Amino acid sequence: MRKIAMTAAGIAAAVIGTGVAMAPTASAATEAVTATACPSGAVCLREPDGSILSKNIWYSYGAHNLQNVTGYKVTVNSQTGGAGFKICTGYNGTGCGPVYRATGEYLPHDYTPINSIVLVR
Image (cartoon, rainbow, N blue to C red; front, side, top):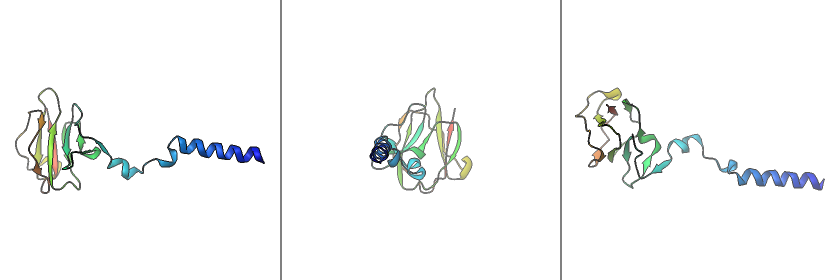
């Protein structure tokens, strides 16, 4: 009996020690803050507190629809090779403004009326 109790305690300690018991939920993982730097090859939206949410990092060319993105955000272009982005009022890349190709941070923009961002070559 003593051996069984010690084995159960050992398994419990091992599970907690590996972090399995403290794994984030799926919704928490999608909202996770990744960093304050936009990764190379991506376009990102930086929150007012300086953080970048994982849902607001895009690598692939084409339209990316925004969900629950409101307020002023800084757009960061870390793409390489002269690639740019457009900010659009409609979903699926409709109603777009000009292409911005310069790398780096752009002045804060009100994303409340914005519904998509398009990454272009």
